[in-house]
Length: 307
Image 1 (tube, one colour):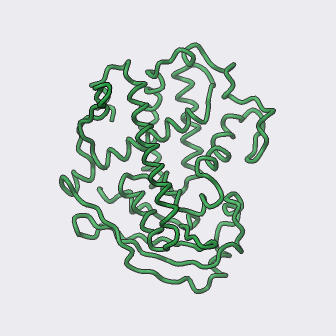
Image 2: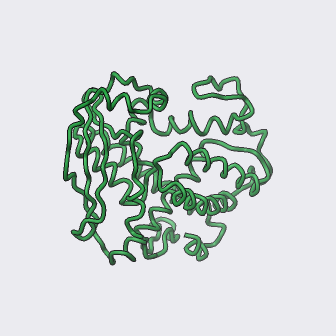
Image 3: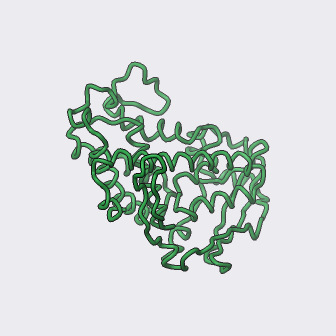
């Protein structure tokens, strides 16, 4: 990604960032729409979860298919448990607190002149710097299974990088989402590759052709497909529910009694018709919808398919 941006005029950083985030938001919208309808099938739910990770390395948005998102909008959960504790860190904020009377680092009084006058150049540099750290976290944590550590470490580093760049402590949820989601998108492109793309209105080049890790490993125009090849009922449901992370369920606002059934599903990942991975996923039934049990995940294999 860093090499691609060398061909752009730095004054266009703001526009490039706009397109990056805009494209990601469109992807998230489609993902959310699909998840509402796949949830009626345990197999489709498991496949959608695995596909989200493998297609573009997007373990971040794969959580839209999990119990984490049962009672929360995914973004709201991230704000409450990971962003607001950073923004209101001097106010002893805890998730669920009323923020109306709190003064956080999102207050304009914390803005430096660099923040007030940034035309996107400095914001783009923060995103670029954070991408290297994002890659480090993926490698160190083997993906997104430990989302608690991922979010905590990422946002802590973001505060440091932004302060070095802008010289202030100003921080908002928009800044945090923009940096993280731009990095998620760039990581996906490192796997899939990119094509030369020009905006039809401005004529600006928004993407430069590059060869992705999947193409290097499996050839150009490689095709990845997914299939649920085995489904097993978890017969001792009481024991299974007892083994679940009760503290995590509490943050999701889920009662153990809400879970009416559970299944273990094996999803096979094929590239050009050949099996490259078999991922086991546990799904649980709450009311009439199936969700991936993200308290029992080990998806590191899915992040090494192109290795």
